Image (cartoon, rainbow, N blue to C red; front, side, top):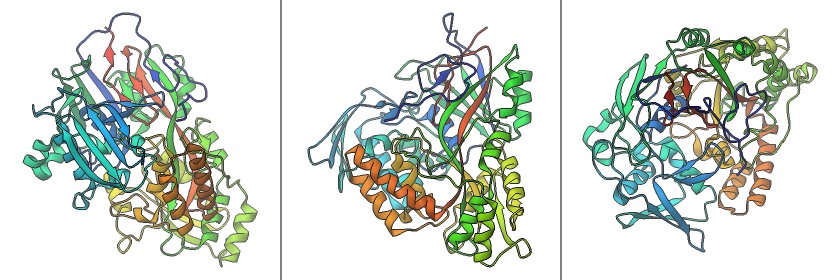
Length: 519
């Protein structure tokens, strides 16, 4: 697996390759205190099998744990599992579980609990978007109290990477069955923190799990505060009412270098930012119009201006540090070519193409500003985009409607390939089996060639061969202009200088399990 590298001019570099920890401690960690993290959006649900967004995943990673984990350095290692083995046929996986682990409600984490969780995700009635991660698993069985066995219908190359995903984390079967729909507001896991409260639109608070099976957290409590505006979030950090702020505006990096109180980290992430087209209906069922919009946008100018050079123009649908990435192509800024394609499709500056462009505000770095830049650049060639935005939970619900109800034309989102494997970044977003409402192919893209290639990528074990398969698939996807391909985003995280041990993971998680506050 590709190792994750810190990108560009990291302002603080104090950890192994692939992540930064907030200032390596010069003194022994101290316990106690409340760590306050400022986020741009609220959680959507606290049922770990039903969420679909990274801010929620950050919270769930403190409450729940997966069988395996992707380390900040890009290695897969056991977490609630101890070990695994795969039979010679590549279809039988035997996983030994860590003994003596209990959920926050005191019930045991064992083979029955692991089976319950995986079966719940696999059950179509659950409507778990993460089902695709294990949809080649045909059977989960209990071998003994600390061992489970998974049977797949064919060799399944990305399975181990997929088992690191928060959407497959272990949750208390007892709590899920007892609480029913209310479980989504009262999650119960095995993690280093327990759920305390959720005040919608304001904060989620977690308290240290003093019965945790591993190293106990240092802080008494972590609060995730919702501060949608980038400027307000940074101001709160500088004033000291936040200890950590995600998505610091990149233009502020130089100014903050001289701060006595605040440090900024710039880290490479696994996230690609894009604007997807609904290719199932006009106007963007016409490939020429999708290509025209791609040519009309000066992505390098957006990266340079809105993002102060902290991102990389997309040359593939996945980020460069994902296993299976290869440079495919870029749609270089070319207004003449854009106008020619528009004329061919019957549009011009005198008879403009009109479409509605939905975008989030406060979810990604400078997302609203970037949407406005896209609007302005597209107008120059005869494309009039009407901008619309919603609260992020409502925004996700809007883009997730089934095809017969989904009249959205174009929308901005990001996708972090958080397993580090190309299957997660391509199958979920471009395979036709993954259309909403249970699936992430929200633009309803369908290409039989791409489907066949992505299916092959899942069952091909040799990584070099998989890389070739994915390169071929990505060439088709890029040529089809399934998206307006924008950039790979970097993480810009600010924190008070008394925050120690905070981990900024390439999956866009801010991890506080080892964080402490220097007094």
